[in-house]
Length: 202
Image 1 (tube, rainbow, N blue to C red):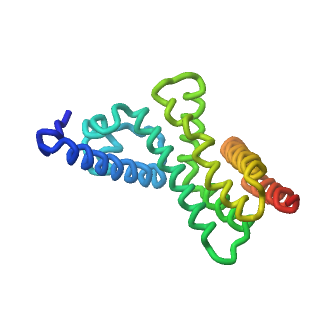
Image 2: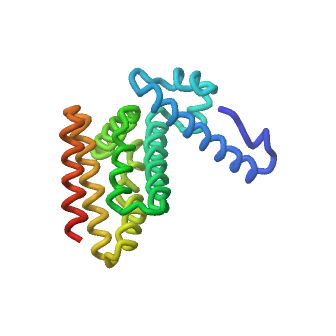
Image 3: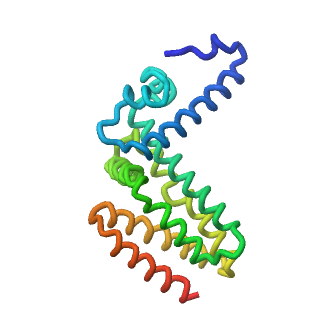
């Protein structure tokens, strides 16, 4: 294991650089998974693909399982960032934002990321401690950005929270449906119907 404190005598600087390096590695890993999938993915093959040794990945993440958690968490953060950017686009109604986000989430190139998300959630719910960190923000990390759109549309905070949770559950359910059935047309039609009911009810 690399001793970064030897390389950088100032411990705070070392930790800061370690954090930056770790973040860059996660971003590169997410990009690799998006482009190449997760079939037969090992730390050795991933490290070779993103330009580091598998030992460095172990140094920064501890294990393949913990790295997978970070890949999923980073993918989720990217999705929330996209939501925030779409919400700032002039002229887009909340239903337009929701549909654009849905189109992004169901991009065939991201199917492996979504598959990894559900796989790790299942392992975490079965009590696998190395996957537990994913559960911590599974719902709560999404509520604030989703609630912001509802409040901006005039909902009171309590109603906005309920609607945000309902929307999140529906999207995840339909994503699981898509992975299980491959019925893109049926799932898209169901999402469009949900959005019609969801926003017409306001």
